Amino acid sequence: MNTVITLILAVGAGNPAKAPLHCPAPVAAKGQINGGPPLAHTFDLTHTATGTLTITKVEAGCGCLRQTLSANAMQPGETAKLTIEVNTLTQPDGPNRWQVVVGYRLESPGGVPQTGEVLLQITATLAREVAVHPPQLGFSTTAAASQVVTITDSRAKPLTVIRAGASSPHLAVEVGERVAGKGQGITVKLAADAPAGHRDEFILLVTDDPAYAELRVPVRVLKREAGAIKANPDAIAVRFAPGQTEVSTLVRLRSEDGKPIKIATVVSDHPKVLVKWSQETVPVAAVRVIVTEEAAIQAGTCTVRVTLEEPSGKEFVLPVAWSALKK
Image (cartoon, rainbow, N blue to C red; front, side):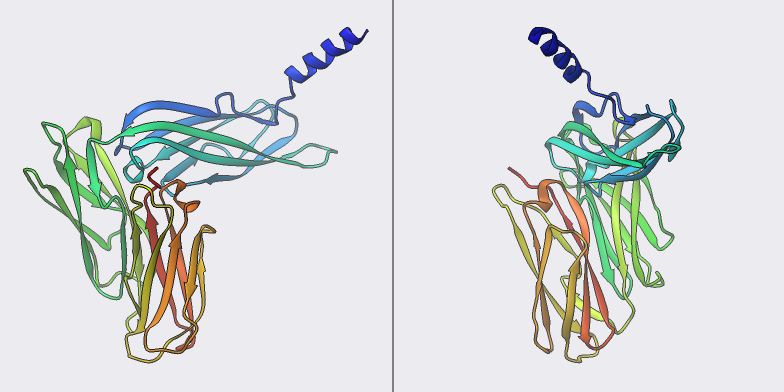
């Protein structure tokens, strides 16, 4: 009798009930690929229960991921397709893992609503032949500004960027000539008449190499009003050296009209990017931004928002970007 009970329990344990939202292949192992071109994968998400299932969130652990979902609400038996695209340009060489959490809510007639999550992963080992430096740009200015992106290719026959464009009419992109041994420079210009505020944009580089047909470079733009707070540096780009577990950057703030400054609050929108600041009323105030080991598990970006007590009502937004931790 005990043997029969044990067998029944074993069968039951070996065949757990499927979750209402089922992905038959939640892990996509891509093996070794070239870093630079976008890496895309489509997951199938099937409604296996009864009632109406609504996907309530698709939460990525990295700002390098873009998502496209074919349907938010499903009836029993229906399948939604979730396409995740990784911008490998900003990711480190070697093994990488990107995670996405899909949240859902199931509502059945007469039943209690049920919520849950499905974890999806893409893994790949990146090998770098073509490098873009820096892999992402940040503008924080009251006027026109420009930066240069350099494309290098370690192969015997390097690629050439033949044309470029931008997601914003306020960004102009100029393609320079490729110089042997030095790469190819791409100048990105932010127009003086760009509207004030914060926006996430990108530039698209089209090359003559089918293997690297397009390279997408993220651009974080913060256009400040004249007379606002000036920071040095006005954008933080952190690269972790081998063995580093934390990087701290000191930012100095001053008013462009020379008035004293007192900081009221400093808030980071990433829980693992920490901030400290000076408490006094001074001509130059200081903010320290700390990118921790937990934040740098993957490359990413965030925004640090500084609110001033003096001059009253003034704010400054500091773009922060970092590379992944190098073991």
